[in-house]
Length: 315
Image 1: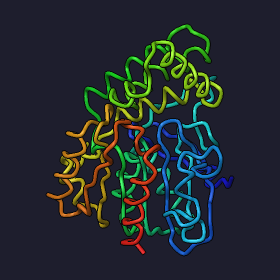
Image 2: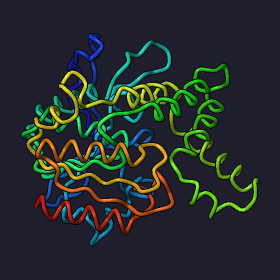
Image 3: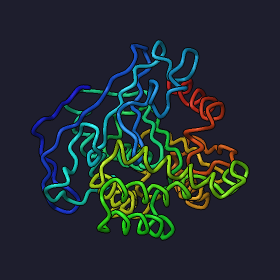
């Protein structure tokens, strides 16, 4: 793990200052330079046994370390090395634009440019913002499973999790129970019904995911990042989605998830239509899957084929 910008200070969208640092990992030695941004509970380890995108780093796959050098930072507000809430003192509300601004400072300080910028879910939100804040740093941008803004459905599903996290439950129970609620927005009914034939089976599955997250994540970061996702809107104070995307200098490739229960297909289409109107749409493709929002973490053949095409165009 590398850490940079130990004492940089950023003025957040709220007007509050935040002194922060960015933790990141660099993977591989290949000639193609790629910046990969994680989702809500992910972190700066996309590869390896516990990596959330590990198959894509295998030999012959799109992020093969012999073909790519991948930078994987931890977003501010998270709990895997970059500045985030400690649970003891109050942490300011942050937005994906704030998270992108912190990354833009880090990129500038390191004099980095990238062939591709990739992000899924929350990482996709931050990638969209970063493409607008540092437009000369990326040859191509790819956003997975996110639109140009959050909507009432997302706010509502997050409010249920927030109510659990703000309850008097102990940390491990609150995180686990909030995760139970989240898992039903991360997956789709078709996939759930095909997999589970008895009530106890899905109960065990939910408990497994809840316990796994409570062992590796913090309550304060969970709340902070839910709030950040709620604030997502690249058109805010920029004149709307189309006007915002006119500031992009790189083609935007969008990957939607056919059965997504979080960022539903209409939000993906709205972003694609705005990008087309702004003249920056590179492509719109869909993963056909019963697995909902998490399909980009499960459908390796489809994700790999799409990503391979994106990176070939960026080379």
